[in-house]
Image 1 (cartoon, rainbow, N blue to C red):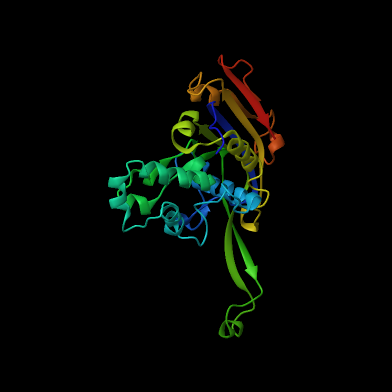
Image 2 (spheres, rainbow, N blue to C red):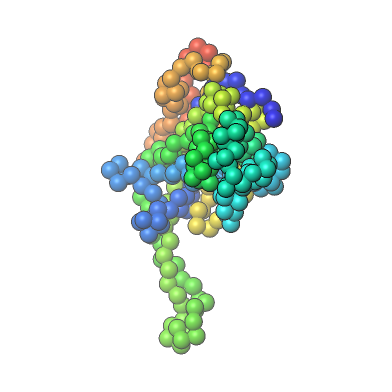
Length: 295
């Protein structure tokens, strides 16, 4: 396993959506998520992590050390049981084995982190191990994301659509089309903020420099293989990375996030493209912090 990263990072991701629904709320009829007090659009961290997982899975195709733990049609306990098999035990014997081997928790955690990229990156709650009263059931990952929020308030639109194919024979005798609805956001630029802890990488999951480079690649390309009519046109426009010169960091994260300024260009009242915004990073950063911009 590669050596863990030695530097703390914070990062800002700017991405936009055009005529699409980036993250529907199932409790609101799949309407785009919105802060009701301010009108700003929201996208959950879970949604973004799904895109990153999908990209890594597409790129690595379950290669050694790059499998995905949270994925479709794979029960979590199936993956959990692999750790038991690796240690020649099972759910019934693990409590007895723990009394004999005080390192059992660490061995199970290390196996899961070494084999599953998303556990090594984001951490995980592994219910199988939690139920067995193992301390390794909850792994805190070094990479943490917040909710993405739109730069300006959004106004979702409900669009009526028609379909000429009728569902049943009886319905076909009564009508010639089916009616439906979908929500879109005409345009919105979203800002996502995230953190990478070198301390947790070293102590817990072993998140490496190779893993970090893959994370940046996945973020930049997370929408490129995930296009859908419902989501419209989505693209990552800029990734701004702040690198500290040591493990614990040289400045508070909020000061670095505040250094990224996004403003509408003069004369633009209703933004409808990324070109309607100006993005700037403060030239003078705290000592020991460097900035890298990727597009």
